[in-house]
Image 1 (cartoon, rainbow, N blue to C red):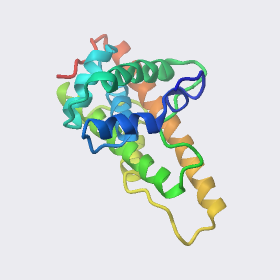
Image 2: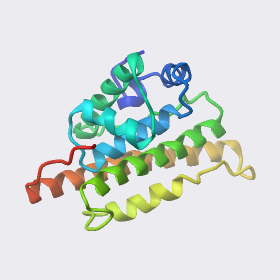
Image 3: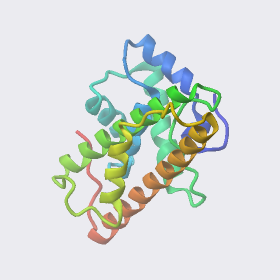
Image 4: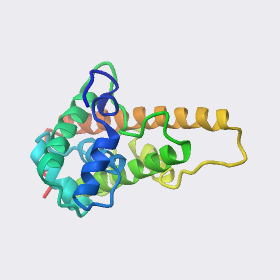
Amino acid sequence: MFDDNHGAGGVFDFDEIADHLVEQGEQVSPSELHGCLTGLICAGATAEADAGLAGLNQVLDLDVHGELADLMLRLYDVTLASLQDDEFDFHPLLPDDDTELELRVESLALWCKGFMAGFARVTATAGRGNQGLPGDSAEILKDIAIMIEAGVDEDLPEDESEGNFVEIVEYLRFAALNIFMDTQGQMETGEREPPAVH
């Protein structure tokens, strides 16, 4: 289940998390879960994994518990560490490359949906909304919101579609890193405590 590379995407098994979700009767994608956790962190939520799990349950209206809750706590910690990593090791949690492209694109769209929901939760709780977003974050968030509608263009050759998908994932990777760094910089200059997620 675990290895050392590629952030959450290399450390956590997409299908294992999906199986746990089915067992708990939750109709949500592992990608949407990870997107939501990433959005919470990038918006400046507390680094405490327990608060991240509570925020996840609230934002996506879930009741994650047991082994899956333990996995989500570790996923939160690994995601935070990968966003802070000097080697830019953050990667969105998506299905393996051998999964049908249409399903990977659908998961990417759900990751973006989860990210926007988690980010909005923290900024709304802090009373910030989308006002005063630092750096390029406002434009990046617009791009991520557009990606929620991502789909496969049936008219494109398969290799071109694959190439486009890889480019979008890479953009998304650095988009999240940029938002995280912008928010952290704003928090440091503003000398404010990170908001808890209630």
